[in-house]
Image 1 (tube, rainbow over the protein chains, first blue to last red):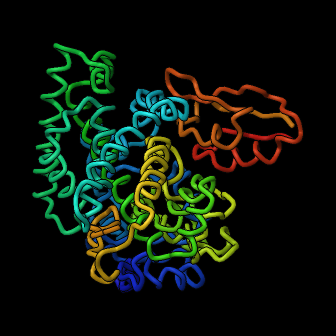
Image 2 (image 1 turned 60 degrees about the vertical axis):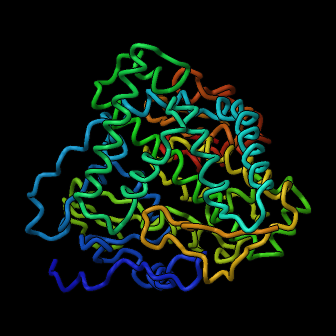
Amino acid sequence: MTNTQHTRTQPTVRTCPFDPPEEYRTLREQAPVTPMTLPDGATGWLVTRYEDVRAVLSDPRFSAKRTIPGAGSPEMNDAPVPPPPPGMFILMDAPEHTRFRRLLTGQFTVRRMRQLAPAVEKIVAEQLEAMASAEGPVDLVQAFALPVPSLVICELLGVPYADREEFQRNSATFLRLDASPEESQQAQTAMRGYIHQLALAKRENPTDDILSELVQSGELTDEELAGVGVLLLIAGHETTANMIALSTMCLLRDPEQLGALRADPSLMDSAIEELLRYLTIIQFGLRRTALEDVELHGHQIKEGSLVVASLASGNRDAAHFTDAPERLDVGRPFSPHLAFGHGIHQCLGQQLARVEMKAALSGLLDRFPTLRLAVPVEQVPMRDNMLVYGVHELPVTW
Amino acid sequence: MKILIDEGKCVGAGQCVLAAADVFDQRDEDGIVILLDAVPPHELLPQVQDAAARCPALAIEVVE
């Protein structure tokens, strides 16, 4: 492969805040597997069709191990892949990944998460009460969308919510596309240190939470425990917070769909799946590395190549979502979507996310029947430069 | 219809329980799939097929 083949860059510019970049549609139709340069300068292959995204993410020949800048060019094929930081099991393959995942899956089952629903609803109600006592407009992100999942994951993990300012700042740095490697590293080191200290305290005085259980299980080293804790803390609040705020904005801009949902609250479950599909906040997709030469649509993906599976593009693929995938339809019959990824890494916390989104959106719509944006939609600052898409703030009034 | 599950592949995502709660459950201790009914009535076929399609780890096989 020559470098000239990498002139295409991964599309990042949106024309509508709720749609992935327009270029993905053309790619799906004309170049579903294409060489490209990523926003951070790495080169590899971009995969944009639903079936291909699923195929890549469920194929053990594509590794989740941390990829290397320049992967995909022949001269880099022999470069060693650095080991993932201890406990960062989203960057591991089976059976290493299995060991970590199995320690945690029991904590996030459908049953356990449904049992948690009343506690989540209580947190939602308290945040809504506090918000209602303020004069609008308020920033929905700070007043509601971020506190709800932060409070929930802090409670589950056993992390003091009072410490949120620091870990929210570090977590935001970690997810910023334009953060330097040094900044990302510093943020990660700070978070690891923080969780490590907490774990030490819990070894002395165990409490009823996931970190204490992990400490007591004796299955993990201190370093691994810190990595797992950081991962759960970041994944536990950033993703859901952005889904709550972006979903609210999206619904407020679509009176017909919002009206349908208000008129028939039983649509909430399907509305949540549809918002997950339609908005797909993991906006730049998931990265994998080919462990051997693989052929995909006639292209030879060489061993060592970086492959990006675009969840956002796959979720708009008309070959799978045959009924107008570009349209938000809160009553759309369910069809498996890619918002939580696919394969062995599919989101561990997805049942928690569903419970949180349902409580948050139902509670918000009930409590504020006249909720509306307080600024024109073009003035809402979008998270275009963040790995997790959404809004930086969302001024609303009622 | 007969259902085969592969516990070794299961990653505890819970998709099958959402799709067909009469047929699939999860172990409390590690979230791994439990087959409640290996030979469910035919009318559950669409739900079971949905569960198999959703499973991110391809751990469910439906033999018709």
